[in-house]
Length: 402
Ligand SMILES: *[C@@H]1O[C@H](CO)[C@@H](O)[C@H](O)[C@H]1NC(C)=O
Ligand SMILES: *[C@@H]1O[C@H](CO)[C@@H](O)[C@H](O)[C@H]1NC(C)=O
Ligand SMILES: *[C@@H]1O[C@H](CO)[C@@H](O)[C@H](O)[C@H]1NC(C)=O
Ligand SMILES: *[C@@H]1O[C@H](CO)[C@@H](O)[C@H](O)[C@H]1NC(C)=O
Ligand SMILES: *[C@@H]1O[C@H](CO)[C@@H](O)[C@H](O)[C@H]1NC(C)=O
Ligand SMILES: [Cu+2]
Image 1 (tube, rainbow, N blue to C red):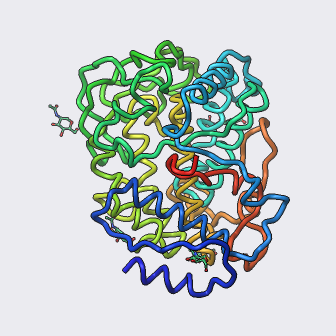
Image 2 (image 1 turned 135 degrees about the horizontal axis):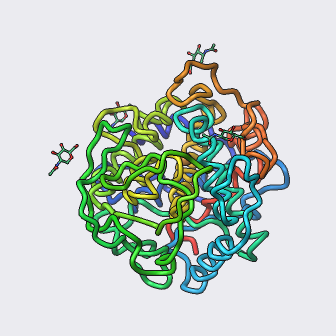
């Protein structure tokens, strides 16, 4: 079935570069393998297009975001050092709205917290997070000497046991391990409608480079039982340790091949509406969607709707979300530049539809660029290649292209 959908589209491709055998996708296959097949299909699709990539960006000079697992020990240490460098720098955000920010790292938590209700379950969800991610990545590079790009968390790898993931294994090349054991009754997520079981943590991250990280903002709306909100956002200074409760139940349940195929080339992929509703967990009651899945798997600070960028793995998660959007855009050129949703969360209060001319708000920290800047230019581009930000990434999938 998936193959048929693809062929319809692929038949319309004209020129070619390299030979590539289109795999037949199967819900029973290993999701890690399926994702790298989708990745190769996407790259082949781009290579076969005769479209010129705009703004001086091409497949050969595009920046490449990579799987953390594909980075060498040295590359991982460079990344960790750059994040710690941002944590050691002074904030530049205006205390008028970000009085709780104490570090340059906090600026990115504070801005997310401030605009939360305008960038989740809204039409700008993907684009705003793409811009925020780019801004963070650029700060690592320009202000902290980092030479690479933002790595991503491949949710499908180690989905059965997150403690074995090189992101979470607690080693000196990880982003820190699990939290200390903290007795609690799981998390009530999805607006309090869905209960998820606890992992074995919930307290302060107990190992690895972010063991002693101090979080200054939040929790504002934590889902985890026993983690008490402070009643405010980026205006409430609340120094506390970074907390996690790595919950493999969540990735085991939802990081599946069926869900991956559904959003990229299957039933949920046909329109921006269904794609976005699926990713944000609103397409079916028993699927929390990849976005909430990643947050809920970290739990505690990383699952707070407002202050989740407090956990540095937030950027790994959103790099993967961005990658899935990018894959989907390549496979669905007619939908790729469309938006779905209004300018208020769940359209509450009721508001107008988002348009591609709407500015993306990163407060005074970065220019308010229109959404269209982060998507393709050119009405009928089969590729939707556009700005650097859009292409910046994902060309080396899953470490297989190193
Ligand atoms: C690209 O073109 C090559 C050569 O014609 C072909 O083998 C390959 O399947 C094409 N890739 C896609 C994704 O259509
Ligand atoms: C966001 O910042 C503005 C000032 O720029 C402030 O008026 C508003 O209350 C803040 N909103 C939240 C949710 O923090
Ligand atoms: C844990 O929380 C859930 C959801 O609120 C509730 O249904 C369940 O009874 C609780 N379990 C215990 C042991 O308190
Ligand atoms: C796949 O997508 C369809 C259409 O969006 C949806 O109805 C179905 O529930 C999805 N399947 C899963 C496993 O989420
Ligand atoms: C808003 O978008 C929806 C589809 O996403 C469409 O049905 C509706 O007509 C649009 N509303 C306006 C006022 O354009
Ligand atoms: Cu967010």
